[in-house]
Image (tube, rainbow, N blue to C red; front, side, top):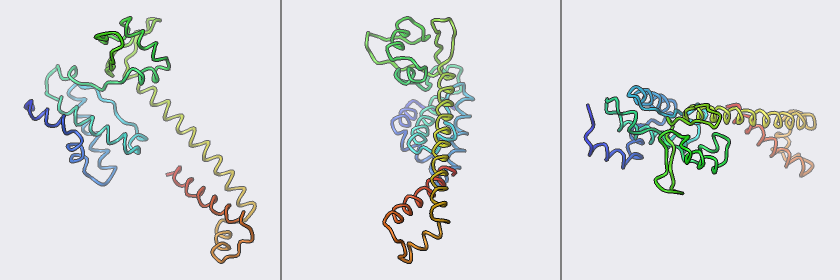
Length: 222
């Protein structure tokens, strides 16, 4: 059954409130399941969605924004073949430039050249967003969809984040090993501190750093 236009406008104007009502569980896992179910429903209507990765769900602000986005897309599910063209995710040109690895000027030039199918500026210099289902024709003749570009970009970012985490873990493990070699087990130095037996301020500082590194390692390992 189609939503009345007044209902659609109501939801669109109060996305944040409706999203908070839909995603009201205090359990992250339950909200993730709800989000994925809604994405399935929207995509079944022919509307393209950009799904968050598992890492994105841990970013509170990003997940809240995605919840509001999916609520908006729900208002576009009208059960008609035209639903797909009504509303899809849009990217600012600077974001598209970043995902493609080119300059913002290059994106502007490609828009002027008509390389983004269906995308044009109503007047020179006017802001324009690029729909995620837009086709881009490279100067080489290769044609790609922005949704595929976005997915590949986010996969690269996830790999980079994992690499950064691995590097940090390696540093932490080396530092922890050096403390153990110098002081013995962590509990031993902690006990000396609790009993007031630390003989130097350096030991106190090292204990603080050691404590932090142990907590940080636990955070990285989940």
